[in-house]
Image (cartoon, rainbow, N blue to C red; front, side, top):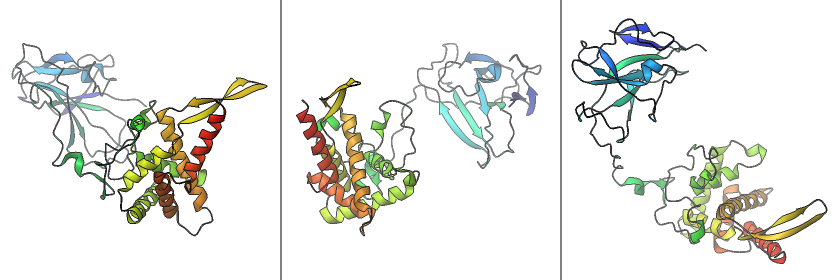
Length: 337
């Protein structure tokens, strides 16, 4: 697909030269509509470099020689559906480390505005010079809304602030400190090693319920199953369902397992310790496997089976499938020490 870089001058698009040189008509300042814009500084090294294919139009901040104000390119992104309202703006502020030279007043700072307008779909990138909003010299994080994350409750009912992970080795791998309304963050946790440890533990349980081919992709159904199970757990135990889920994961993760050592004919098993992340992974897998097996050809619903499994596992009861499998793995490992 060929991209046609354009640059606006007095509202008229001017095609940039292929080698990225300055167009024949000068770029006029959008603040005073009088002064000519000159390259102020390159932002090629910035975190937000949106149009690397247009070296001249996108990799510079512009400086007016008359009003001494800064301007930066605006990119109109043409989406497939193009349903965004006209004039909607997304503001990205540069970091505080992006200091301005001493020759320019310290009150001037740069912001990149990305305007997404309702336009007909076209394979073109359009760059226009837009006024740069003035920002304070130090960019500070905005304060959270009233109440902060303390007001966020799972399904609008269950608070995670008082949930305690009783095994200190699993504290960093059972994520309950960043509460969510729904266990559906749509995050990309598989792109980086160990990043899945940051996924909310309830969402990991939901995702594990979708195992086996016929259940793949039915996340809304899995979320409803977990929601109903939380209601049942609260009715039966009068406890926070989040605490019950965390206790079940802590109790069902095997601490010792056995691995195969050797190759070909001489193979023996050796007992090994299990890492905290694998303990959490195995605990969630054992819990959901037990739920699927108990719900198969049973008059009880999946939500009821999940609630029973979590309650028994949180108590360490041998009625739990996950507890029995954990004890079996540790017993085999003990015999192979």
